[in-house]
Length: 366
Ligand code: ADP
Ligand code: MG
Image (cartoon, rainbow, N blue to C red; front, side, top):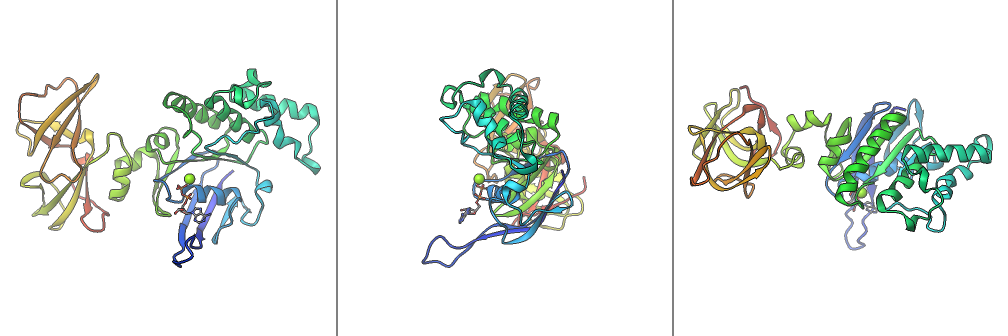
């Protein structure tokens, strides 16, 4: 099911009686979620991810704008009539019901033409339980399950009605690191197996990058960039997006362009054709540095961390904005740890320039 968001806006009135300032939680969001895809809604806390999800679900009404499921305008439909499955961060299972009863619950409330026989319901529940691999646990109570298992039950409960759209709001946040990894792969597998159009909300860029077909990066209610994870990583539209994606994070410097040459401090690091003379913000991915005795970027060496396949070199530079510069170098390269300095040349496609004030991307020719 294709989901279309048209100029979706949500404004909340001020919570504080003294100030009249309203909150624009979501600002003019237009996007088409392709049928059968998994879209990651990504951004820092408070940027409007949940509000967007709740509008898609029908739990919240947009202040303006429209939502379509396929060709059907669902903007005024109640959540029950939209055919959605919802999973929250806290699993919200009924504690007094068994796993089976929890999964059956949404089916028991079906009325009219959708009403199912007991056998049909049991079959459907078992099918959903198998999909998330908890069919062995059907008679347990939620308190007898691990966090990861509880979240699987919640997902099974969301899937049992065979929703047109699956909506997940930070579903992995309450799980420990190992389970988080495992469960996110499970979600991806289930999504691929069922082909259900899915919106996955997270503030964790790595999580979004690893499972999404498409990512929508948001900031303060405004969509910053939409694209495939790798595309956004390789081609961020502004400094916010460049900084939000990637671990270790991107390294940021203040710089300037003079006569087609990019300077970081006094170091003439890269020829950048087609850019007017101006102050710029320079961002370099950790993998964008090459160890080079004759390299133009002169940094002060602080520390070398060996991480198996790679070496992480920590250094500093007087023009750096980020507190440290962290480069990732292939472990075959030897870093002279006794040296006080480390010199780098830069890989042009890993270097991004931004307007020093507006923080919008400035493109250059290599
Ligand atoms: P996220 O899920 O990205 O953390 P939310 O969508 O929950 O962000 O919130 C976006 C903004 O809207 C925040 O500034 C938040 O404080 C505000 N907000 C969310 N829900 C309400 C509400 N019911 N009333 C007033 N403000 C709200
Ligand atoms: Mg939220």
